Image (cartoon, rainbow, N blue to C red; front, side, top):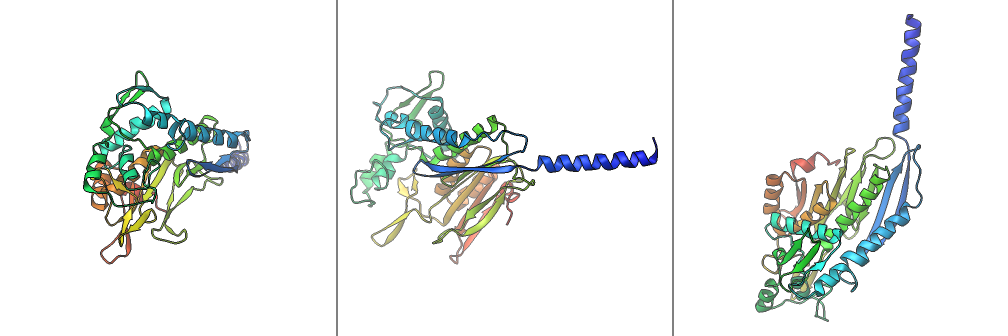
Amino acid sequence: MSRRLLAFTGIWGLLLAVGLLWFAGSGTIREASGLTMGTSWSAQWVVPPWQDRQPGLAAEFASLLERLDRQVFSTWAAESELSRLNSQPVGTAMPVSGELLEVLRLSREISSLTGGAFDVTAGALVNLWGFGPGSPIAGGPRIPGEEEIREALSRTGADKIELDESASTATRLTDVYIDLSAVAKGYAVDRMAALLEERGFDGYFLEIGGELRIGGRKPGFRYWLAALEAPDSEAFDIYAVVGNRGENFGIAGSGSYRNFFELEGERWSHQIDPRNGRPVRHELAAAYVIDPSAARADALATGLMVLGLAESRAFAEGNDQPVYLIYADESGEWSHYASEGFNIYLAR
């Protein structure tokens, strides 16, 4: 073969490679949004030029989230599975869906992993302090007495839920009140991601109430970027930015800087420590977790907010968990800690 022909074929090969690379990195972003679980949801996903747009996906998202909320996880809807489980007689097994069983199983796992800092049965305590859906207190938040706290603690504990996976049943062993709001949004966003991946879409940015699931890249091979909110801000201010590097994972956060009430001259967090029955009182303002599962990240972020700064750092390092913590230092200024696993995703 002549040098001219070799050069000619080499140039065309290079052009073909560049063309294929451009084609692979092209596409359009589709969007959908709505309301679910008492908050908003949004979805962006990349449709490559060779793939069917599947315009019905937005409606499928809405239908999926409506079902998970109203029929499975809601504590407000009397007909939901969770509401029926909470009203089931103590000691009576109730058949449950695979979805509820999976989230209850995960909740018990994270409760054990965090030493009880994450506990979906803390509803009795939340209601006792006056800011839960089952609160008997018409006047809103109040400081309960010691005996009331002890009584509520006796009805708290993930070990008081018995799961029979072979029979697909759940049983309340004592009169616990189960609230899955600290894990259900993460689970739902995982289900949205699974739906997209089943349809062949691997580039997406999904969000429910601030809990995220990110996958693949944007058109042009760009990373998806997620902003971590600065604590104690009137408006939304960015404290840090995470880039997914083309990887697929969930990001969830939990914070106490906006969820609080003031009573008798003191500021109290809505975040209850299930281990002692009282609102958390420490310097940690926000905890963010990256995990392959957004549901797991959601639950862990809540647990870390209960653990506080020192225990959360030890947890991140001991479990090789990507964690980002924002806290008030000794001077009252905001500072942060990023675990090694989280640090690699920080864009700024």
